[in-house]
Length: 524
Image (cartoon, rainbow, N blue to C red):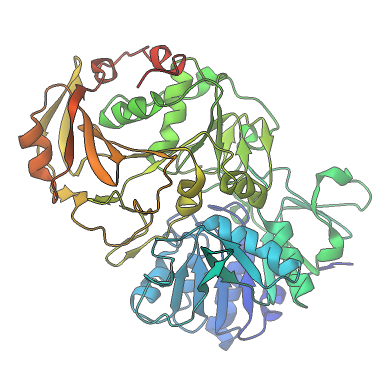
């Protein structure tokens, strides 16, 4: 039976040198009160120290709360850190940049499903996910700084084909969060926006001989929970911390509690604010033109998540099924600061199961962001000089989805005007995004599958990856190809012989033209 303890008591239970596993996304799943107690304990006593921190998604609000609390203690508390996305933990990221801790970034789906391999006592995860990217040991092996020496990924041959093998490891501590615990330590997630990988992490720790600590907001009497609502059974939970403040229990990065995220209510769609009309909305509209009725979509963080608002505004929200890698199926995915959740989801499956669907090719289409692109069709969204971010689910999702649409503005810091069916460049940007070579390969054009359609959508033009070459197939009305596009690139792309104008309608404040594309399989 689980013991109920304080956050300070929980911090003292973590041994020096322990491998600590987390589960969640944003502030969902993050045990803020226990994390602060671990930080304070290290500052006061020097213990626990030398921890190896393992996380999947970004965990934090990009300000003060989240995993960044552990970096506030300075060097020594965390000496090894790996996750799919590390960008929101500014203090730990800075320590990594200064080579004061080892830092790996690995694919999100690999991490959340590696917990299941560890729980089952298997040696690791064998997959093609990551081949040709910076995770491949022939390139960087997922290492994010020069001080990282541990090898977490191996290139192997199996059945005459190349695979990557991600090695299992013992897990000493699972640090998790739920909504409610009963007196036996059974944990429910009723106010969480999604079901994370907490069960797998708890099982991995328990079967490794480690301990499981879960922070919750509420305590209820034993025998009062619906057994189907229990996401982590009490037999796996050693210690429960009931939070003393609501600030430790936010549902997302930006919201303490939105019942439409967790299924308590259904929010009217007209209450969802439409996307502001600017070049970003133009890009989202062009991406939406690739959607077909009946599609199962994945929308990534940032601009891609805003495509959901375009689909809703155009009246087709019930004709496609949108999803996020967190496990949300249906509804309207929320953008930052609530990414990972969705308004009115139809179903919520666990994090690992969603990546099973993704890795097996179950999506119809995905739309993800562009950080940098190069002549080979490679994309970088994971590292920009000292700004370490990681791939999140980017590598997993692009590896097996039939249609992959990357989107972003053509230049950074440009001043643009859209309207009346055209685009006007008022002031040219200062940051080039289409480079000869990207700094880090998060998506490999070379490893794109022959059956995949790969597009790169900007407000100025649309590229397709054709025979390994970046090819401009569409240009925005009002622009000059040489002056406004080719002269602003560090490589010379191919230009389609039948270069087309982008639909002028998407450059008008009121569009209403999605039906032409979404209902016609032969269009675009």
